[in-house]
Image 1 (cartoon, rainbow, N blue to C red):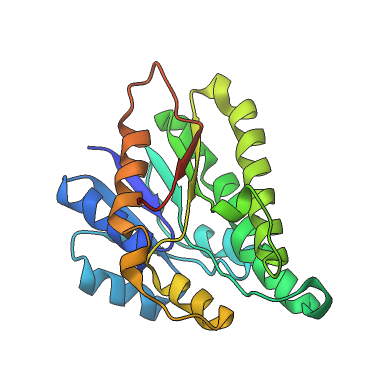
Image 2 (image 1 turned 60 degrees about the vertical axis):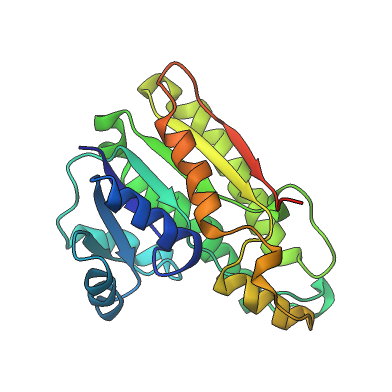
Amino acid sequence: MPTHLLTGAGSGIGAALAQRLIERGDEVWLLARDAARAAQLRRLHPAVQTLVGDLANPAKLSWALGHQTLPLRLDSLLHVAGVVELGPVADTPVKVWQDTLAANLVAPAELTRLLMPQLRQARGHVVFVNSGAGLAAHAEWGSYAASKFGLRALADALRAEEQPNGIRVTTVYPGRTATPMQQKVHQQEGKEYDPSRWIAPESVATAILTALDLPRDATLTDLTVRPGL
C-alpha cells in the first residue's frame, strides 16, 4: 500500500487529492498546523493519520516532527499548501515577504529535508504544487511569484540531486483554480468570484495522480494545467 504525506489538505486541491488517495485505499498522512486542526482533519477523514507542524514557522518543523512518530517510508510527499497576499512591490512590507517565502518556499524545502530518509527508503516522489505565477510574474503578484519561482528552482535542484537515489520530482503549475485561496485573490483584486470559470480542484488532483501513477521508467517533471474553454 503506497504511503503519502500531504500539506494543505484542509481545502481546495489538497482536500480533493487527499480524498482521492483515501478512496483508492492508500495510506495517507496529513500535516496540520496545530493539534486542533489535526483533530478536525481526522474527523473529516477518519482513515488518515496526522502530523502537526506549522509551515508558517519552518525553523520549528525539525523540533515538531522530532517529537512525533513519522511514517517509516514515503512513496510521495505532496506539497500543496500555500499563501498569497497581493500588492505592488512598492507597498509590500517585509513581513509579507517573509511570511510568503516562509510558507511557500522555505517550509517545503525544510519538510523535504526532514523526510528525505523516508523518501529515499521508498524511492519516492516529491510533488510541488506551484502556480502559473511560478512561470510568469505579473503586477501586484511580486511576493507570491518570487516564492513560486524559488519553488521551481528548489524542485529542479532536488531532481538533479536525488535522481541517483531513485526519487522523482514533479512540479505542477495550475492556472486559476476554484479554491478558497482563489476567492481571496478575487477579493484583493476587487473582482466578482465565479468558481465555474476556473479549474475544479478535482481536475488538478487528477493531474497529480497521473504523475504519481506513471511507470517508473518515466517522470513527468513539469505539468501545466490551465482552465478549459
